[in-house]
Image (cartoon, rainbow, N blue to C red; front, side):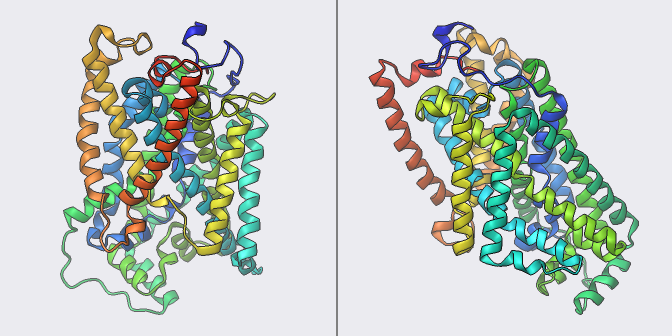
Length: 499
C-alpha cells in the first residue's frame, strides 16, 4: 500500500489489525447484532406504540427486511471495494467529505454506546425472570446495586473478550448464532403449533382478565403500518456489525460482501418466522388486551413458550433469551470501537485511538467505548433513562441516506471517481439501490422526525441536534490538528485508511 495514501502520521504496516475472522464470524456478528430484545418482544414494542397496526405487525417485519435489501446491497458493494473497520463512516467520508461522514457517524456512535448502557441495565430484568423461574430470589438483581454490578460485569466481560483478540470475538458470536437459531426454532414450532383459542384461554387464565375478540375486525392502519416499519429499522440495525469486521476479515474483498448479504438474509428469515409464529398463536387483539391489563410479558416470545411448554423448557428459554439480549453488547462494542479506531486513524480523535495493542486490537478505542457505556449504565440505574437511545433509528436512516447519496456522487464523477471505487459508480444495480434508498429513507425519516405526545428533550431531532453540535466541536478541533501538521480534511479524505 502506498505510504502517501495512508492516514496521517501512520506508517505502512504500523497499526494493522489481525486478519483472522472468516465468513461464519461475519454472518454471526450481523445476526448477533440484530436478533435480541427487538424480536423477542416485538409484539409488545409494536402494538404498545402503534396499536392501530393491529395484525399487520408481522407483515411490517417482513416488508422492512425486504426494503433493507437496497441498503444491504450498498453495504456489500462498498465492503468489496473498500473493506475497512470504520465501514459506513469511511465510505461516506470518502464520497461526501469528512464533515458529513464524521457528524452522522458520531450520532450513530453516541446512540449505540448509550444503548449499550441501557442493555446492560435491562439485562438484569431478563436474568431475574429466568432465576425466579427456578424458585430462586431473582428479585435481588432488580435492585440498583444488582443492576449496576451485573451490568458492569456484562460490559467488561465483553470488553475482555474483545481485548484478547478478534478471533475470540469471532468464536463468541459463532456460538451465539447456534443458540439464536435453536431458540428461534423453539418459538416458531410452538407458535405455529398452538391454536389461537388455546393461547387466549391460557393467557386469560394466567392474567385473570377477559380477552375477547372484537365484534368487527377492521384492517390495520396504513400510517401505523409505516410507523411500525420505521420502528423495525432499529431491529435490523445490527447489520452494521458485519462490515465493521472489514479490517479483520481474511480475503475481505471477497468474504465481506457475502457475509453482509447472508447476515441480512438469516436475520430476515428468523425475524419473519418468529413474528408470524407469535401472531399466529397470539392474535393482535389478545396482545392489546394483555398490554392494557399490564401483562405484556405473556405476549413475548419467552412468555408464549412459558405458557405452552413444560416448565423446564420455559425456564431454559428464559435463560437463553437473557443471554441473547445481553450478547448484543458484543457486536455493539465491535462496531463502536472500530468506528473510534477509524476516527483515530483519520485524525478526528487523538492518534492513540488509531493504534492497536500487542494483540492487534484497538485497545484505547475499546476502553473509551466500554467506559462510556458504563457511564450510561450508571445513568440508567440512577434515573432510568438512557440519553441517545431514541436517536438510533434516526441516525441509522441518515447513514443509509448519505451512503446512497455518496454512491450517486460516484456515478456523477465518472472517470474522476477515486481509484478505490473501481466501477462501483457505473453499476446499474448500485445506482438503482441508491435511488430507491434515498426515496425509502426520506419517507421513513419523515415518519419519525417528530414523535407525537413527546417532550422536546426526547425528540429525535432535538437529541440529534445536540449530538451534532458536539460532533462539530470535535470536527473543529480535528481541523486545527490537521492544519498544525500542514494537512486538511480534504486531503485526509483522499487517503485510504490503514486496515
